[in-house]
Length: 173
Image 1 (cartoon, rainbow, N blue to C red):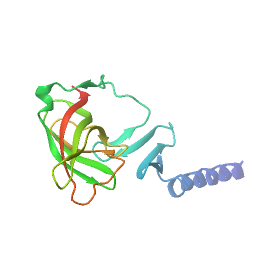
Image 2: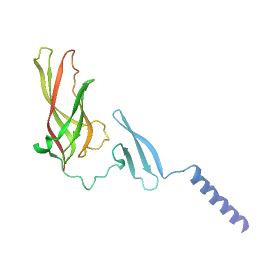
Image 3: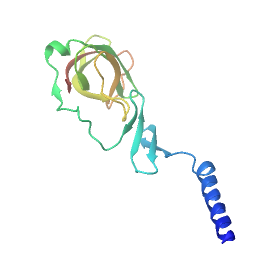
Image 4: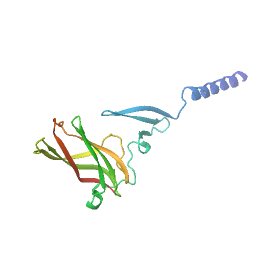
């Protein structure tokens, strides 16, 4: 009987030591690659709940729609005029840093780009739909900035210039 108790105590101590030194956390950490972006992911060892680290809101559960999410609608003109920013064209992409001064959370921005040659003639005028640059980025909340981008399919040639303006946006109120 004495050997059974000693054996049981040894097994409990081994399990305890294993839990402390070999399996030290509740989460298993991994990474998820979406395009060129790599984001940390943690998986709860007990429940299987999977979360991804968002730069703007911390750990966010995957596969669960938020209760406050609503249908995306076009921003009214009064709110659209409150979106401002700067744009650049690099490596066949347009990138816009947009400040959202509206009361909406913006998920998509449509911009019109006009490309002009050195003599001032218009080479191209086209609208592009831009989404948040990073695949796991949150939408642009009210009174915050977010980088939106899209593939242009071309680069500016030497001495070409461009102008842009926001023509529409979608989001939730």
